[in-house]
Length: 279
Ligand SMILES: [Zn+2]
Image 1 (tube, rainbow, N blue to C red):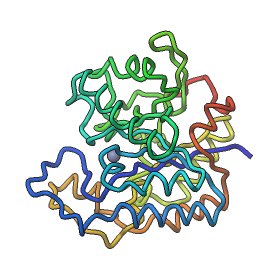
Image 2 (cartoon, protein in one colour):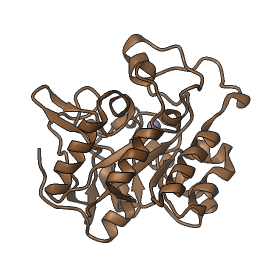
Image 3 (cartoon, rainbow, N blue to C red):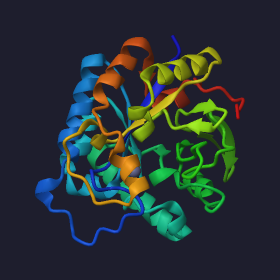
Image 4 (cartoon, helix red, strand yellow):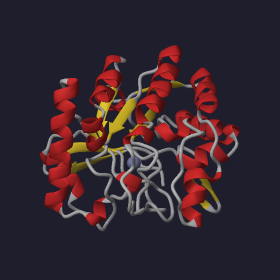
């Protein structure tokens, strides 16, 4: 059976891009560890390995988190340090974010990350230096380009593709989307995964797999923590973050029963990615 990938962006309930937090978030309201434990127990009961894109600043504040994830045999990758949109960073600031996150992941898991995902798919033509910098630092793949309107590039590839940066072969691995006459729908994670019928997600996975391509789902710890706290947000952001808020666990469990999942590292290492872009 064809393999897909489940990915988790490891950040707390208040890591929502573009929102200025005036007050610091009190430590007793942090929920990332408990919510991540819930994801880990779901993976454990299903025998599935996943890729966790860890935010370096969260790993520093919660030093048991990376160890807990690594102990389950899952892949630890990088989500940067501060959750700043990449186009708001200079190349040097981006290098610094990567270096700090690599250092803490290495110290806590014993391995350097080989994969990167930007906050809110913020790699685009505005950041042409990103792939060169990742290649220079020995990353093997990026998972930051989303073929979506508004937060990504609607003309982008819906399936993984190979590219060369700084003389190195790398993979770009986009998240699952469902193509429609209205454009691509974000069925692979976030509000779209919780909102659209599960049959639509499953049908999209079936079609991708039939064409020899994996589907990549993405979760946040807050997606499995429906009673968690909420930030006060402008209407569109409020809808995306909370508008369809419900528990993602039953949906993920149901997909685990029907499809096979593994880590992005495994897909890359075992040549399980197709090379022809489908746009
Ligand atoms: Zn994020």
